[in-house]
Image 1 (cartoon, rainbow, N blue to C red):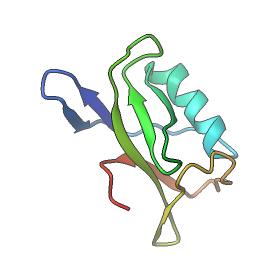
Image 2 (image 1 turned 45 degrees about the vertical axis):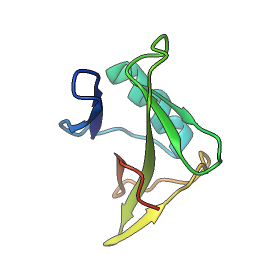
Image 3 (image 1 turned 135 degrees about the horizontal axis):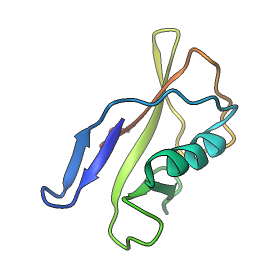
Image 4 (image 1 turned 90 degrees about the vertical axis):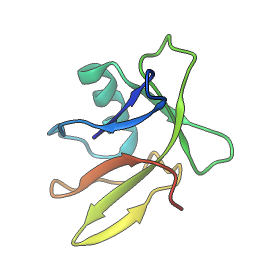
Length: 96
């Protein structure tokens, strides 16, 4: 998992979380409950804004990618994208 470091103005690697989610929207809610990070769709409809908290006006743009069966899937802004128990979800710098 990545977190925004305001001192460095960049994303930094963080330990991952094990969450039980059925889709991206549910995962984003659980990430906020667990870490305080607030991640919401951005315009254009391809990226997400990653805030340290819901009240923090600063953000960094991220992609959300799912690794499934060895393949990387860019979910764009499809928050209804279904998740499987074996999926690995990553927030990352803009890549696609």
